[in-house]
Image 1 (tube, one colour):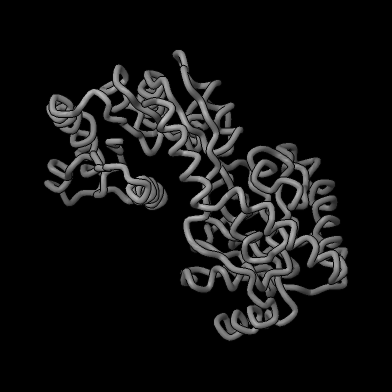
Image 2 (tube, one colour):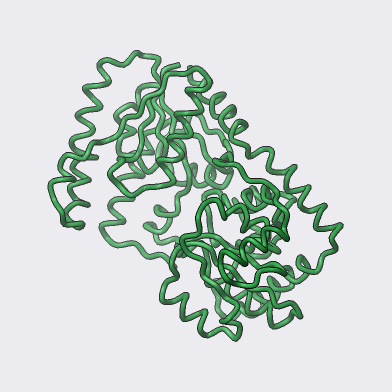
Length: 385
């Protein structure tokens, strides 16, 4: 099979999508297929040093110049070539091949939801709304789709403005290896690395400052847990530098000395961090998939996440669940108390139950291996041949 993968421009600061596209390319090549990338080159983009002007120049490269290049290339492509879009956000290019064999990978629709006013916590500018409308109009010309979760598939069917001929769910596979490491050795390593006493374990969260990662909710639950518990485990928030709002939340906490923002942690320490954690606390407001859930399970860490798709899809019966954070501030105390109770129960579980939970997690994540994911994606690609 000959496959052309449309990807985000390399000159933009995307990280996860290029990794996903490279995973597709490497995986399909390993299965005997011929694969090439098509993406815009930085022509107008590199003409300016101003970041604001570069943004608009990138649009010229992506949406004026690149479509011309694609139309010229299409003249030389065989009729049975499969055109793959690594992300539905590449929607403006989909009409270029909508009458040929194509498939679109869908990750999440959070930006579109925000633009439609469905997420008050994340308002969108007027130009952002126009851009999301442009993307939606484009991906609605697509007919064949792969979603990374059932929740993403549901969102696709809600937001697609046309007719969908084929829709499949293919869960993500772990992009790198995670192993169950000795928790005591892991805690010792983290203690040395961070100069923080992690010998008894710690509550862990990993993620950025995006509203849906809900780092504020993590701190709120942690505060309430400390109020009801005799344990004094620290909280490690691993990810980017905290926002001013998060720093304020930390300083307002009665346990601020035990709340630590861990930034720029090297990749080789992520597995260690998971394995040493008493639990991963992951109360996201929304996700496209929820990588940390399966990464933690693969590392032997119990997981507490939200009883909402796709988190409960990914966590299955191997995770412990709390309810989604309420939007009504009057209900926050009840939510943090109920959530803290779940944390306390997990921390107090017997060694036997902890080992059983870890084993259940290891079994559960077998459906999220890279080979399993790529085999399933290849099956869907072949459906279009």
